[in-house]
Length: 197
Image (spheres, rainbow, N blue to C red):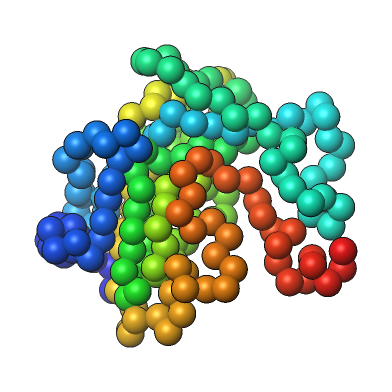
């Protein structure tokens, strides 16, 4: 079941869902009828596509070598070019209990100008703690200006039938637990890639 605004506020009030901000800002969470809005952080990672011909997880030990971290200062925007793919991050650090999952979705107002904030990875496991890495793509023919601090998406929360036996923070390999910056893929840590290396 998806949590209503009433239940989201209750979970925030009793600490079951924890939200904190990157520099201790004290924003009042914006709760919609069935979601909580998330804001765009100030860190981005761009792929240096001129340096690498193919993204091949079988032949790479890390994607970090082919990305560049950018921090947007002050009130400046970040410009996302047409068809460009950029990793962004939320201002919020989220902590989920063992019996709730969340789904990250875009905002309708931004979707109408061609902005996608996740390509496939919108699911957030129970027990997860960290910022949310955003997979930002501009599918418009015109560049898009995005501003840190703007509401970029929303989280919908769903209750589970029972708490997870092994939540994300207790897994042997929680690749993105307690992430702060936008994080590149760590798919090469998957068992099937370890066997074939």
